[in-house]
Length: 588
Image (cartoon, rainbow, N blue to C red):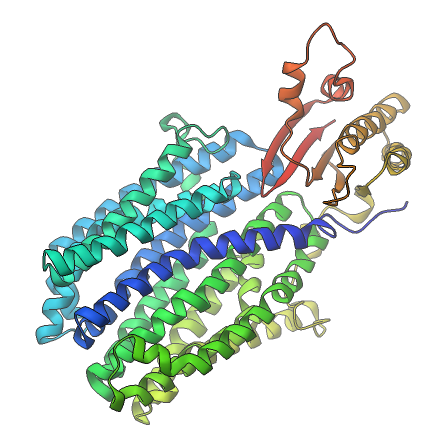
């Protein structure tokens, strides 16, 4: 049988680039928001204000831990159900995740406000820095209620084809929090409390904008009736890796701040705060674009049982992001001194700022090797391995680096913490692959071990790409033969071929004749439990054939005949338009 490469040979790169840009914007704009807030603090409150915000950085790790647990969990759970065409499952996962996120956020917000003094002291703030940290945390506390469901909203907006709205929501968040920071600080003289309160107001506006969309979404609709609490186990399982990473970062950041403060005092703390802001606004933007895209595409590929696509995904992610990483670090290296001055660093402290900024952000050069591996393992269900590796390398590896840096009294070594830990984790993934596969990886981006029993056997899989009516006819004959070979009777085999032909011809007929964009259709079929499942994916504008059937005029029975025929033959048929792709799933 003539089979083309697995799905996304044509579309995976296009899908990744589209997702990367929007996901990077979704991650980067909040980080840029924080960067602007820190600029305001540095310019109008001073080095002590920056140091106080640095002491409160672990709070962001706590919020990110729950954001990852539920937000990433919702993203992967919905992605897998999307790959299977399970619309009801998507509504259940989305509603259950968002309502549970809101409950957890409320508990965190109340705790942060009521115990702000104890928290600031536990994180190492003292004297005037303690007072500033307490004020900031009290104003920031409402953000904890909003950030966790807000993250789930932003991730799902992308899958619900509302990427532009997510960007608009984040833009409004940035504008409002920036303006309010200046107003609360310069007009009302609220100091660090005003800075935290401005961030909370920005998060509130973002959530309200998202709620307006999901109140009318067809696929991602919030509904109390859709809540199934047993679904939380699945969501938490998928989001556990992201959550654990941030838990380890919380522990690491707390220890890290204490050691940095003991080595060089408030100057080193403010320098590290600036480095961390550059890291979040630039480096983590790129990482967020890559990991978010990888997680979404991997979860869809798992739902489709597409092993070839999974094996190719790491290379796609790295090839797209590594040139960006190199260019980004070069800019950071060259502009480290001007950036330091922009944040108000005094002339005698510039060298400390420059060294910390350059070394702390060096990890971006190793990240494309390591990060996609975590999310591909997570998507295929091997969640234990990334958890163990994060525990070993991100927690205990970090503790070891901090301990060595403290014993050697070396701020430079401590600043390399992320680079060292990420390099060790990648080496760990390579060793794991060698142990499981009993051979060396075939390339530096092929270190994910996918068990042989994960996929549908090759002989039970049909994959075909269609770009013309001629190829549609060729695929029809191949699928008919494929069905006969799997024991289907002649009538049913011909019906399956007819479904393929009608859908392919109906899709090809909508291809643009002007050549400005290359449209493609890919079909995947596999036998499982005695049924043939066919999935048709194209990058045309949104078109729901089921709704089209409902709108056809009875006086023109020939209009839309291909989809009417398929509907009458199919046992089940579902349609989704997500990630810029039409996906029609037919079960025969």
